[in-house]
Length: 131
Image (cartoon, rainbow, N blue to C red; front, side):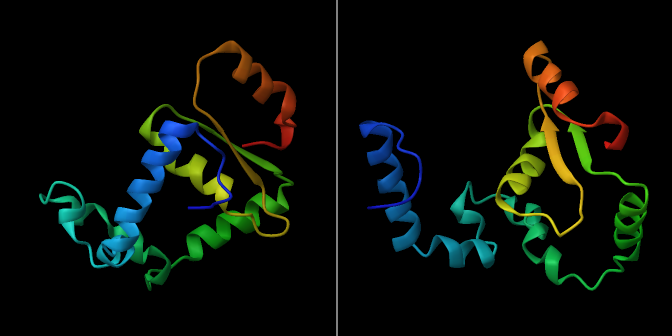
């Protein structure tokens, strides 16, 4: 299988290719959208998949839009999320795969207590325009 992903080494590449083939051949994406719990343990995983229809939710999003406009008006150019483990994984993935809207603050995730990443966050962001 040829992909644009970073090469992981012969063994891991082969294992990843095999797992992707199983996912593709077993209709993994379709099963995910159908909330098929058998993709995992067959237990209650389906109840954790509400995010699949989040973009289609008719809920009032005016609060989020108001906050976005407020941040723009205040000149905020960056958002810094301090987290650790699972609390920062989803935002980190989303910030790396989704581009922000024009004029929207960039999202940065600091998920470490190591002094080097903390220092990079401190020196790499205009902290007076970061929330």
